[in-house]
Image (cartoon, rainbow, N blue to C red; front, top):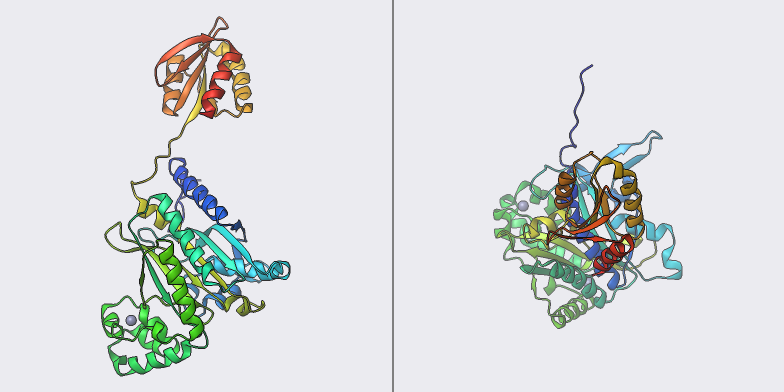
Length: 418
Ligand SMILES: [Zn+2]
Ligand SMILES: [Zn+2]
């Protein structure tokens, strides 16, 4: 029988150790920032009942109709790999009755998402998202907090060239009037719109505004913006949010094309776009969804959130990455194989002290053990000599001295703390 080789499935990617250091850096920083803003981690299953997403994202969207990984399990249940982050968090919030004791809750998550898309730069069928959801308050201060959290995180990563695009999509009271107006405006131009937009005109005219085709954009460029039609509540919320963002020193641009098609999306919609790579690259998106908790069977509880693609962030950072070096505290080397047992014991002893330590497993000569120590970034080598003596070698300076074991450990520990 011939042997078979396997590759990672199309649209997925292995993250090898040299690269995973960057991922850890991003994830750790995100945890730190989110927790400093009072958010706590939530972890939900990788797959859910498919209906959860059909209901929350909408059957007419590309995500649900074309891109969702839906499958039947052996019990005949229709399940789907999570295509986005919010629905699962809201489902868990309702299922566990978290609103009963504590109606206001703030969550963050780091999770893979799955979409059957055409693979291209920065887009994968399995990609990863960092996100937050704040459930239980309609205060514009919370919208400002969520946006500022994303902004601050990108700032700390060193992504300076970015733009915040901001819009309000109104609420079930004021939006229908705007949609009416929009349809009235677009109908005479129906034949000039792309096929998708002609359909959207019937079931979701708001979505015509975010069509990327030039011909459609030309037609919609003279459409009156939605914020001229907001009800008092939405208008107050929107202007307070803008005031808060300004007070935090966050520059923003009003972008009336920033719409989200579903009824439960309300008020704030935003996107953070990086201008670093020349072309505009959206790295973060979010907004308010005051109707979703109720849509998914919970009480009418307002919420706001955001999500950020890790791959997009990495693509934007490119080479400008804070240096993440692989480092070892110490490499235990020995003159000949007779010392291996002793070296192995010492190695474990050093690890128990919390030092990052390693040794040779390939029966290398002392010379090539030291070469290996260099390769893995060991700061020191402890060399066990045939005569029982121990030598501490500073790998960077190339200096070495004979030491007592306790003395060597003390020195390594001191250096480990620095
Ligand atoms: Zn309104
Ligand atoms: Zn179009």
